Image (cartoon, rainbow, N blue to C red; front, top):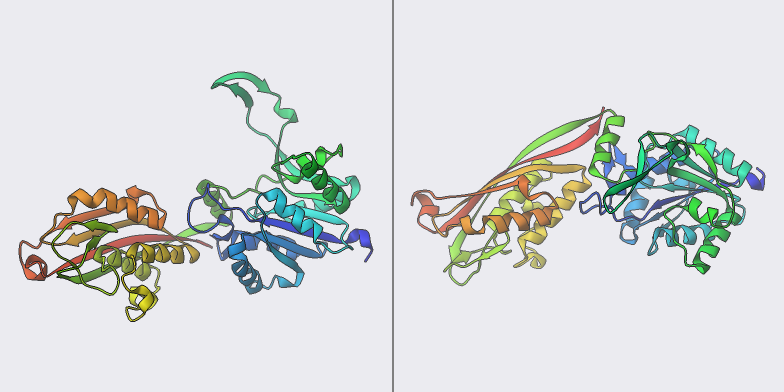
Length: 393
């Protein structure tokens, strides 16, 4: 194998995914049977023309990244998994500098472009070898206009406009020089081709692929699932909890400290409403119950906020590929009236689960003074939830 045939790929996957929302970075969300990042890495790892791969990811997710790629049998070509820098540019520069000396050609690819095709990768490699620098792009389909202060000022000729994609390929020495010059001049760009252009090097446009989408928003996920021929798995769960009312305890319901002469007795803060919601979510996903995940015999859960536990349950469901459709819950108590606190409860729950407030409904009801709730001996809560997981055919 000649030196000039050695090709390395850097997968940029250190983004936080803020536009997507959710506790999990978007590159680790699942599309079908694997994560977005794993799909992107797999596309390159399966090609004999690619010799090694470096993945740059969030520092706190490095162990997860190793585990995901190892589980798919993709480790034979993985050179390193590195923590991301302050900016994307810092991440790629650090990765490029650490590549072995025999590498002559470097491809850079977004870790959230899971549908990159073999043909596009090979086109980019060929063009980069020939021209020194090449980048995938697709022609703009829509009419593009420039506006100033919300008024259109001119129409751009779309025949000369492209929407940039990855992979982008470069001779390694050229890419290193582009980065070094950018840092000297304090230049930051949104892609590597921009930095290379600043050196005076022409970048060849490789015919891209309209299916090579970048997963950035929820709408992109829907399109991605459609490309996979996805269908939805819908599950329903129910939860119920009850705690005794006692003196000298705060009354915490829905994460709110409610003024009352008694509070609920329990190992944690005894928030029956959140406990019922957690059990419903765990039950819908067939993940057991809160007693399994947060045993009341463990000291680290003594007096713990149930909002914290609810956040952990939400992350667990997200890791399993579920999103929450809606939550409907009822608090059963003779006193106090919870109506004044419902809106704040919904805000706390929506923040803990990172879902829209309008997906949550909370009701208060009495038992007309019947039973232990009617005698004000305790408070109960029940919840029903719907969760959704998108799966491939």
